[in-house]
Length: 540
Image (cartoon, rainbow, N blue to C red; front, side):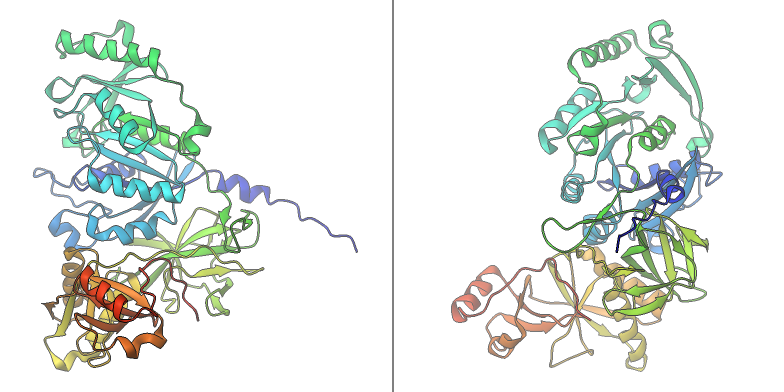
């Protein structure tokens, strides 16, 4: 019997080609949240942008929807923002910049196809930027670089290019170039057209800035000292001689990074970056699946499949709901469809589906590869789960980070035990913290594990604000964790300077006070393998 190959869904492929699903990464205070807000402004998704640090403009940013984020002026939780611009449809994954939330950032990057790396002109490449770049490199994400805060004094732009080349190994290719900086900042040169683009600051950056273009060769250097104007012209001539051309294939392969300059706060260069990114960034492509080192890819026009990369509770305090974020990987999503939950093998009806815009949402009837869909109150879905319609599919597991800090959580009000247990279980599912339990205390005094202290502060805040349960955190001596086979747990109980615990997935871990304590345990129990935390696949 001859087999018939189904014709490709050309309408699906055309629609998918307009999608740009990306994340913005940076060191804290480099301007990531401000740039996110300005993308929304220029795309028409918001009428006025909320500046994170503006005292004159009291509006809050759209992406930082959590009250604690607004109090601290930092991003704590990843946010999804869907918006359109000049025929493209963007799914912007706004990630936390703080190092304590690296695991949340990593999970979110698993759903992205590209990234914008934001650098501060005055500081260059900073530690958290380097760490997030390595994550992007491991994920194979192409990176567009935006050098921010050019309206403030900073490092020489050529020095920034050298730093990118030497410290992260990418070949930087400037698409735009600043004329001076700080108070002398005169505009940005679009190297593709040879034009100088001047900007007029409007409403402290809250509204779209007017742009004036003129050929650089005949431009009037008004407002810019002659020596700085000449220096910028000479730098551009040097770039024309020494810099290679932008090669999109090299960019997509992770060898080149297009570089844009500007000021997100003042709206300088934002439109150039947004349009340039849309033209350069890849549309969603086939996703790798499990099955061996040469596993076949999941083609876009195959049956529906999706990856759960984030879970968030209480985004709408009025309804106390729980949202699972799906990245559509192939096929079409239709509201109300039934898909197979890969981990359990059970059918799941995707009835309450929304398209996210930070805390706001609207019902979505259909989505294509690259789109992010929020499924409300699908209580069985966890981070890393796969959904599919048709042949089974499993995507590579999302790794967990090895915890570096540990604290004991105590319930201040014993009458609110149910809220205590439910709240910690939800924060554990979201990955805000990892909740570990000791046999002798169980749910009464669990150990919270995380990468940084700020995770514990967020957990404490959310327990009180969302679950009505105040907790006290008590320090512990534990400093590192290792996974062991459950059969060896009895032998390790009572081992000096250690404690045996279990996590939500049923794994048995041993916490140690120091590397020396780990070495002593390994010497006392040579038959035990102490594995570092990393990729761990959940079983049903």
